[in-house]
Image 1: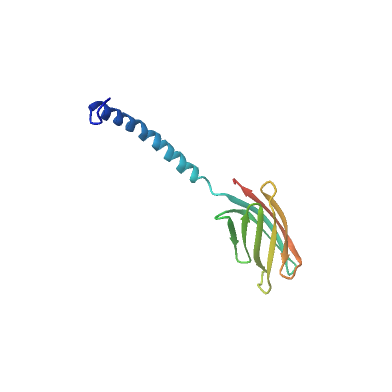
Image 2: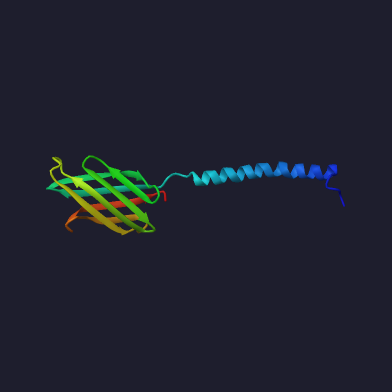
Length: 136
């Protein structure tokens, strides 16, 4: 049996160490690449009517911590995604800003897509929303 202090044991340990370092580096690099993938995005197309005026917004926004938001001068909304449940709350105002209305929408995702009705704070239908989760 070889002594732990013998030159052969030290060489074997050194060779094992040299083989383990590149393997560990590859594992760390792959794990980092998997974690730093692209952030999921939400594509949306929203149509809402206030005071006889049609307002439309569409685009793509990032999904962070299962939430997203959109904000302009006349239209803003936030949403949450929990599993396949989506909830949206927002606010819209007309061009003169004389009227502002809150709205909500909710629904279930089917194939990462949602079509929902925007309901006003008084329970009336105000518009529609199409939403799609991209690269998720």
